Amino acid sequence: MENELNYTAAFEELQEIVRDMEDGEITVDELALKVKRAAELIKICKNKLTSTEEDVNLILKELEN
Image (cartoon, rainbow, N blue to C red; front, top):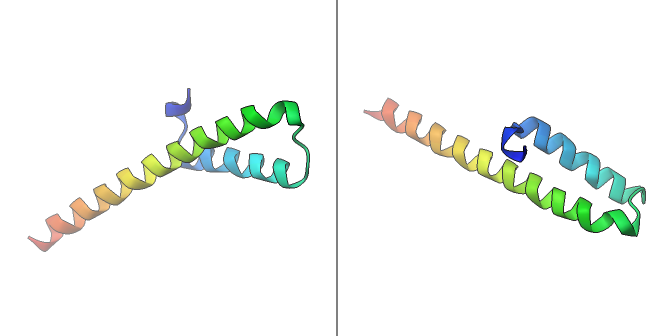
């Protein structure tokens, strides 16, 4: 499922987890699961940003030729 998320959806879910943590809405019992999910979401966002950067660099390189 995580690979189906686009950057925006992953980032929004990550922001929601952070807000819940900051507001103290996550119980100790939920904490490990939320941190694990946050790590997955960060990985999705990072991979998408890296892929986008590579695509943009390739396009710019093609324009130089």
